[in-house]
Picture 1 (cartoon, rainbow over the protein chains, first blue to last red):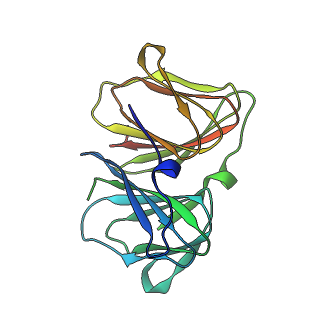
Picture 2: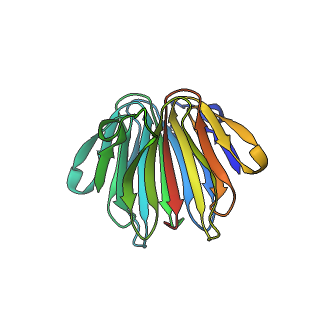
Length: 105
Length: 105
């Protein structure tokens, strides 16, 4: 067993969102992204098999999809997307999210 | 893309911890467990390949391991365990956790 506290291990930056690699294995990759208000992970996709989950731990914002679609994002929200489907996140307040990618990219 | 808010979709029960299936696919299974103070997911393991992550969203408690070992559990903690390695959770306050299993059991 391995434990990491993402609140202790990572903070926020005015320059760009902060990215923390929590775990990487043949089974999944787990990342923590911290966004200051207004920062975003732009819409992107990769033509590979697999799915990504994005869980909102703190803060509010939007999930971004194809053709500029958005879905509100708040604590407790879990978004599931194919890796091949356009997805992104934009923060409307300081926001911490936990991302899991399986299989890992 | 699919979104679910686990705070809206599940609550707490005095009888036993509440289990919500958030997502199941060939890539991973995502579950939300809500524990009232004192409830627990007993230590268990399965002799199969793969790993499980347990993220603490709210509340405090302990991660349980083999031979009665424990690790404190608080918001922001992410535990990674092989599925074949004994693991469990015990709540010391009302606690919400997000569990991801890859590949899905």
